[in-house]
Image (cartoon, rainbow, N blue to C red):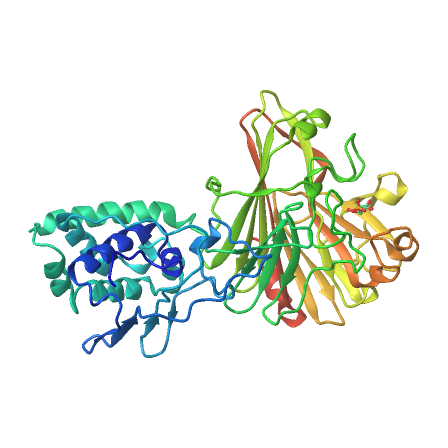
Length: 498
Ligand SMILES: O=P(O)(O)OC[C@H]1O[C@@H](O)[C@H](O)[C@@H](O)[C@@H]1O
């Protein structure tokens, strides 16, 4: 049976904003050449073969697994968010099946006079102009060409002939092409690859992003908290306590809790503010970032927190707190937070990425980049001291706010021969915390000896509150890389690379 076909969700995701175009073309194809859409077609000239034939349907998702509306546009195979696969012989597989929570909408037929230039467009768009993941690895053009072939013919000329009878001057085709290209380029910088949404222990949504090389990050909507960051060998880079309590409204001991709008107990709110205890939402409509964040080669998810009625009672300021969590191809993790004042009057806040780094043994760890800085010692009523010359090492409890710190610091784990490079923007301070033995024993959600395996190094704005006037927005960025210690000097030599 041959009816109008929509593109599989996999393919739609890879085509991004261009997907409706291809769907329409697919519909046209089915209308004109019904037998071809379900069969494998080979082009001996191009050696491109596209198989739209039935592939095994993916297994039904487990009961605890939901697919977010946006995630329905991403591959069913979560380990491949970059989607389009291409083998050495130039073969592209476009699986027909992808589970989608809602029935696919019926495609709209394009009138041939419109379809003709659009088909040309499929052929002519350069990869970068396609606002999609496939564009990142350069295979969008191949997909477009292959699709066009499946739709109608083996060559552009044949395809155009098969699709429409209308005649267009070259100039008109070029104008349409340029317009569409401009439109797609506008979306290009903000287009983000997909992610997978599952449930955590408490039924709260959790977002997973995976890079093709195997690195991954998981973010919990409870707290907007990154709870796991793994490198491409699958090694966990963030610490989470074995005694962590994963139950809202308690903050989870580990990962990267967001401290907002208060840091510590310096204010009237609960310790570290309420953001880490709230349920965030996935932000489908995140506005573009004001400054350049090169999202190519990154997969990301945008989260949003707005104050509830209860929040407004204890902190009467209307805000929007956005968090973009991105994972690069290399496995670097970046967090970009934006706080917008949607209030009628100014407000001030503190902020910190309370980052629990996983270390081999705290006695083997040192921090470079904070030497000679002033710090406020939380263990001495925030008295101000100056760090003396050397890299910071650990022999007892530490709870300090290093003020006016540089944009890049390094945390070296001697035993693991691993260095965390911490880059930050918009966050002048670095908080360093390790509870050590005695305090560990007083913490219900922390193992007695776990202080040896963690070190909190928080990019933060603590000493001086950030003030926003009505309508103003603040941005604070953290980027984390974990590199072999032998390579870390490269990173430290380029402090401006954020
Ligand atoms: O137990 P919490 O609220 O997660 O805070 C842990 C620590 O977080 C650190 O950032 C603070 O500097 C410490 O003072 C605090 O003890």
